[in-house]
Structures are given as C-alpha cells and as structure tokens.
Image 1 (tube, rainbow, N blue to C red):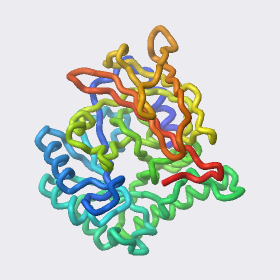
Image 2: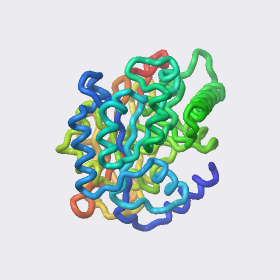
Image 3: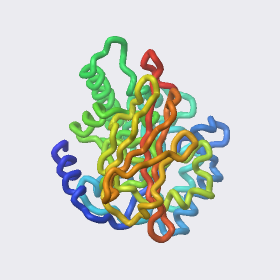
Image 4: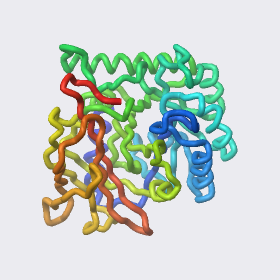
Length: 350
C-alpha cells in the first residue's frame, strides 16, 4: 500500500493538465431539528439536498466506488457524489433513510463503536445498523472512543502514541466486522484531526482516511485524509450547495507545513502549495482564513508554486485555510487545509 501511494503521486505529478472531473463527498452528523446546531442538518434541508442531486443529474455512489477508483488510478467520473454520516446517530434511520430510499441513494455511516456498544442516547443500535447495511449502507470506522487522536497521553512517546491509535482503529474495525460482517478499512478521523505520523500509519495498514476539510476529491487528493464538505452548522445552506457540489479539486501536489498540528503559540509561517497545471484562472487564485483574504506570492514564473502568508495567530482549536480559483463553465477549483492548535497541556478543544 505504501509503495502504491508513492507510485501514484510520482505518476500523477507528471500530468500537464487535469480534466474537469471530480467526486464530492458530503458529511453529515445529525439529521434533526432538536440536536446541537453545530453538528445538525434539518430534515427539510437534507431533503432539499437530496432532491437537488437527483434533479441535477448527479450520480450518488457508494463511497467504495470512489476509493476503489483512487486505488486503481482511474479518473473520477464528473458529477459523482458519496453521502456520509459520522457518529451513527439514530436520526439517520428516522429522518435521512426515507429520503435516500426514495431516490435509491447509497450512503456510508462512520461508527464509533463504544457509543453503539454502550447504547448512548441518539445512537443507532447494532440491529439498526445491520438493517441499514441491508438497505445499502456502507458501515465504516470512526474509532472506538471518538477521542482527539492528535492528543498524546502523559509522557507518551511518538511510537507509543502511533501504536495506541493503530490498535484502536484495529479494535473498531474488528468490532464492526464482528457485528455487521463489513470491513472496508475506511476511517473518518474524529473532528477531522490527524497528523502525518498517523496518516503514514494508516497508509501502511491499508486504510483510506477522511477529514472534515472542504473540497472535491481528485486523483491528487491525500488518500489518508480525503476532503468532505461538512453540511451542518449552516454550511449546508442551499444558496451555496450547488457551488460546492460542482466544485473541482485544486490539484495540490505538495503542501508545507505538512502537519495539521499548529505550533503551540499559534504562529504559522508561510504556507507553500505546489500545483499541477490545470484549467483555472491563475490570476484569480485566492486564499482565505480567519475571516479575511490572505496575501499570496507566486514562487516561480510558471506559477505552479505559491506562498500563502498567515498574518495572524491561530486561535485554540480548529482553523482552516481555503484556496479557490474560477474554472470552466462557472465552476470553482477548491483546496482546504485545516489546523488544530492544542492547549499548553496538549489538549484539543471540541
């Protein structure tokens, strides 16, 4: 698997231009009016999303269709969408399933197994998950405990930390297989947080990973942290939904700093992005973070490498840098990098 992904990157960075092809992965949590707004989409809005996809000729496929094409280095058919739900909430069964069944849409549920085993409030049971599996749900890994995997235990060394997370992923994968018969080695990182060491670990163990950073999926997307569009907390408003669904992946071949963990003081130096050539309007590439437009500087005359200046200290918790550029037919290329700044004692903020 490690050799495969190295070969994939070397091969793809030789491409001179990328076609306007993309897959988009949607990320939901609760489909409910009475759950926390930060992780909720109303049933009415969810129904609008599904209707728009159906009416506008989008092909909703199992998530494994997209990941299998990435593994085989096959172009992703345009207007391809996968639907995912994190945390296995019961509202998926009550409110989302009838809508998806009406359109015959497949979907994926990422399960944190302890919550199901302990019958947490608002969480699906294994019986319900098995029923959903028979109705076309892909059941996948969201760890056992849904902790912040970027946190280390007191005095925990790097190798010990990586092994602990590896063991937890394996425990969750085995539990899901034991209860449902499914094992796809797809992992959605809790809170979208990860680190290069953990990404390397899942590559070596045959997993595909998913984050919570925005953007479409392309052949250059990081297979250890594929982008998804979060659609709770107002991010799913219909006025922006079509733009997101029709977005294209800005083909970033390298980003530095590579880590998602910000320095403890929150000061980020320049961010460097290397790009493959494509169909975007170079003069209109723009990057945004912390509620403002960022200064960018091209580092070569071919305009395939740019430096993004981060002028402000990142707050504690999670932050995101989005870079966009207009493309063909009114569509937008999109790339997102997220950061997590830990507290002085190494804790992440929910």
